[in-house]
Image (tube, rainbow, N blue to C red):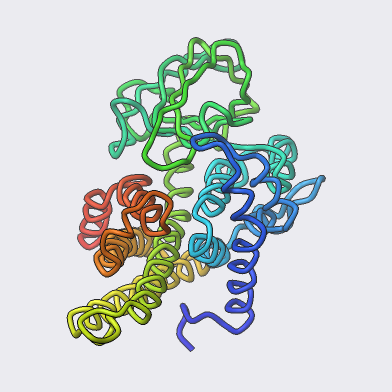
Length: 379
């Protein structure tokens, strides 16, 4: 058996998550406020035990500090195939909290992780800035020494869950002019003096906003990892989550493929089912083949992550690149098979068409992934 093959228990788990998403989570997601944090949905996932799967061993007393990339991919693909809002809410719980899990002091972990796993606290990953998106090492949010801590001054933008999160994993510059080697990571609770934010309206219904830091105080015990080593915290988090962004994309591609197959089998055109048209059947074959190839690449990267493979950076970049580009193709092709009805507001494919574009940009645009892959080839 190859490293990326799913065993029967994993396949059963994926089917259970997908059924749960369709029956319990989708109605809660649909009743939420577009563009806002859906705390009822997050709590429902916590009550169902899905968030705890992100943080095995988390209890009210602490956590084992382990997270499985394969488990994360199973969750994200299965949820995305039925309810993209639930998938994104789960992913953001993990993305915002994982830096605390991997690098926070024990007291910080005990403060936040059990609440995140239960769906009672909402985190956010605050890396991007107006002048530092793909070039994360160019960030300028300043962390100036202040007694035994720091004060943060500057801006963050395109931050998922902002400005409604309960705490933010914030990356700030503690050593001016030092590039990636002068960045530190902090866990900053919402409500700190000088911290404010606003929503940014996007084409997808997920919460995204900007944050302004006006001398926001942070304590020494809120530092994640070592001072000036915060870029490592960010990259370790992104290396873990990049394959799972691919899993999100695979889930959307699978949903689009299934919709196209159903429609092509039921739609009568030119004297028979649409699927009898070679142009359509060959397109469906290409959609299925690319989706399966993306799935295998994603789970190969996840297995490499769980095994501690030293080529993880390249594998993760390949998985995110290929899967997100594939999902764009598959969703677009499914729209073409359906015709104008797929563009009607409220149609599954209209929803997926809006959702599928963003993953090719966030957590490293496709062009950045190609740069990462090429750089790793030269090592």
